Image (cartoon, rainbow, N blue to C red):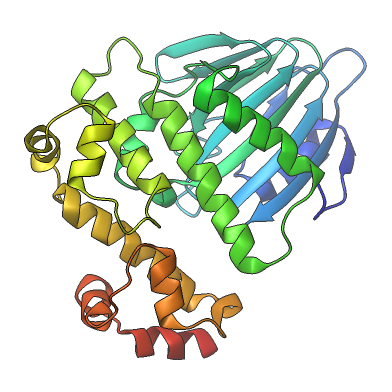
Length: 308
């Protein structure tokens, strides 16, 4: 990766220190007879951390003793490249093969057992960035997803390509983080474990689709319903039990990103209208009031806060 120098580590303590700083406190045990060695390379892309980890055989554990209230709440998405790895979280255990993707929720204990040298790319996404479906993904942790087809293939290719170079500009990096997150949501929404409900899976896919098209001003209930081969009435019924209707949820997600961009120093010279249009809102007459209602701050409030 272009933004950081790879760390070559010897011994479990040095790896624990680096990994804990990047992700959250964890423990490494049961190294092979030759001792433990690892190479860790990482980059920060907006709110997301991407790390490539190549390590000798060992067991990585995040247990109740490691978890503290001050830890960042991450969801770890692991793209496995090489070596046998067994992942355990809650009551689920899976053997992950090269070319498969799986998630771990660092707010709860998990264990990764590498019986031989392994190589994986880890994408760490704040749970807050996953919105209202963080809990849905959390129920599917360690459930392996193949990355050879469709969205999984695109995500696997993107995670591999990110090693070759990252955009330098702050806004471009932020959009890359959004794109990676949207791909993850789509990949996991497209894969349903046996106990996940069909309705929940469909809502996840609809949300993933909408997040990937927030910048399109024509995104609306009719288009989304047609894309997912359901009626508009069915679409609204799927969101009826949630905190927000479908239309209100899309508006909230757009406003959330506009607020973030207004606070970003890299957007200082970009007009509010341009930022809003980026997220599918072309009429800014009521934008200030909408932001005030949603977050308690107007456009001017956000611009001023960015300068301090």
